[in-house]
Amino acid sequence: MGTNDPPPPSTSYPRPDLVRKNLTWTILNGPWAFLFDDSNTGLEEKWQETGLPESADTHRKTTINVPYAFQTRASGLDLREAHEVLWYERGIQDIRTDAEKAAGHRVLLRFGAVDYECSIWVDGHLYGEHRGGYVPFDVDISDAFAAAAENDEKRVTVRVRDSPTDLTQPRGKQYWGPEPESIFYTPTSGIWQSVWLESVPAVRIGDWSAGTVLSGDDIEEGRVRGGVVLEGVSHGALIIRTVVSLTGEVIGKSSLGVGASDKEDSVAIDLDVRISEGDAATGRIESELELAYPEADVWYNRIALWAPEHPILYDVEISLEDATGNVIDEVQTTVGMRSITWENGDGTFRLNGQPYFQALVLDQGYWPDTGLTPPSSDALKADIELAKRMGFNGCRKHQKVEDPVFHYWADRLGYLVWGEIGNAYEFNQEYIERFNEEWAAAVKRDRSHPCVVVWTPVNESWGYKDLKGNVEQRNHIRLIYTLTKYIPPIS
Image (cartoon, rainbow, N blue to C red; front, side, top):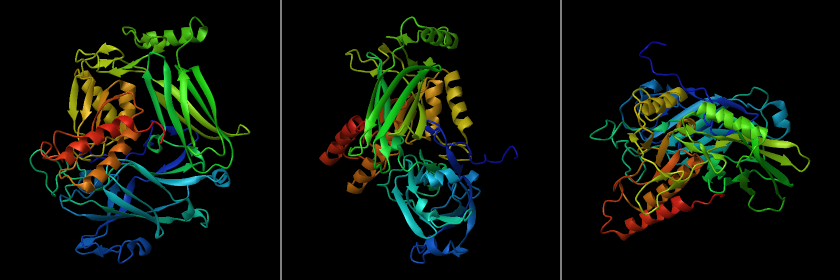
């Protein structure tokens, strides 16, 4: 690759913040067939059934480099044009092992983000639809392989609609024209985060977007709280086991059952993670952390605190077992113990009970060759490291829900994050429904990260041009506040 060539698509697992222990997956980044549909005739002509034609209107079918938007150089197209309807197509195969097929595993087609509305077919059969350009989703396409012979290739077709001019559509700094102007940037249309296939158990532990959540906010009691949501249909009793470790030493365990008749299919987590006093394991933990952070006081109430100066994370393993003890699913993640308060009466923001000055950058998350899409995990890591070397301890991630790999590194490197989303510019009922749905999904995806310390759902008065005179606009701001604060820990 030449020095001026754009980066190749990422091949690393897109969700390192919560990973199955025995993971079968394959990345679908790379070349896809691609066609503009300016006359919006693809559905009428049933492209999802026949395959993309060689041309439509004045456009030829071409190849796009997923997950980069067609407006970027990394996509291979680099077009500053306005197109509302886009079609993607590529072949896939069943990735499940023989043992996974026998166990009834499902195949999920997973998307990190697609801007803005999309429909997904496999061999002409509709498997799912999604709205919202900043948040992840997946569709279960297992039935597409039900009668397939080994190594049979199936055709995935994705139709995307991203209006260049609909100002009730959350878009952030993306300009509503083909060329950026003023303070606004080049639009991003279509697939812009990783796409992959993943084999999962039929009954499984849900990810953050499904409602699973972990919180280390309670440093006074030294407890990890939250909940594990189960996905799929269970016909028998199940057990959820949680193990929390620090520097390799187990410090907390729980084992809770989910009955066959339970309606919620979820289990609350409430674990004491304070280390014991005086035993050998405690000595090993203290020695390792003292070596890692020799100048920091990392302890409070027998728990190791997370902060930018000492981003200590506890390892968490959550397993799902049947009544006989057979492990059905197992995921690995982390949790940070840290508290945030701002109601002390002195106007200070406090981290772990102490006044803390936030030296933040306004990070808009655009890259020269890849637009909204980060060029790699290493690039996100380097971005944080460079900011910290310049004396900053965090960022307001402005008008964008950043790739989850960013939060993975922010947790590990110690970087405060203000979570945000792209706002729209016109207010009406359509905007309210769109925003509520997508904002709730963004908060659920990222709320378990200790790096996230503030939510900023609305920038200035974008989308709310008459707050003084319009009670509906004021009421919606109040609703967003309540929604952000009280999204259920288990949903």
